[in-house]
Image (tube, rainbow, N blue to C red; front, side, top):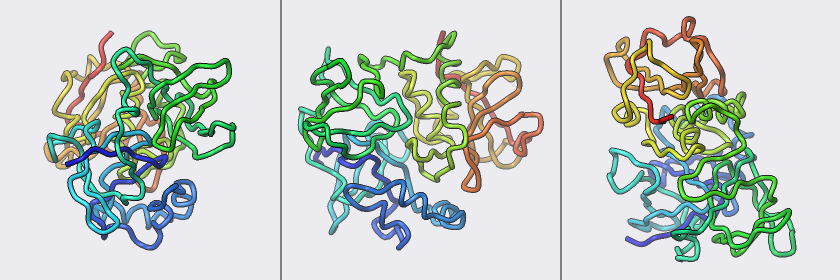
Length: 309
């Protein structure tokens, strides 16, 4: 096993090398064309990702992965940052090898070193001549090399590069984005989530180009420095159990088959006042719903809290 680093804005992690079809070609290149890929997909294409279990998850630019095997143009990887019962070492799947670069300790955020966190929904990367390069997703995290008035210099697998200061936050390890005015971390989770209202759902999605239900919950918690499991079924078994009458903004609501007694298949974020924000399914986009009228209300199985005051 060897370490590598994601070298495209978002690497889609497939179930097996044979999972992508012709309409997915733009997702397999380096650099990757996420907007072109997602913009070309029909609802039927998106539903097919679920029906075929084609996509496992995604990993952002600069994410460290462990390579288990190389087969032709593909690499079998684990993502240590995404905890899962599928593999205790990290979330498993396959990516095109061209979307990875060799790991170097220069890409690691060292103890005492600040990180640059993309705090805008997307941010453009620039080279040393300030020429525009690839676009990065929300919560992409990279080591800070130098801070300037309008720019930050960062270490990346494409070489040292720059981001606009207005698009990022400089944070210590585990620190949350500061520009959200909220009474506590739970309310901040909700506030971060609201900026993505209308973003179309993507099965396996883990980026600001499209989230699935648990990917949305995972990333909004990560925006306040809280790490939770990747999948809804795992999220539902950790954290603090919360009774219905004790729900607060930022708590997670889980829904299961067999009127709440079967397998967990969906998660949303409680907003307060009987409302939930969630990424619903391949036909929809991130939305706010009233729980009293929500179509899955009878499938609510358990609620969990990962944040603290």
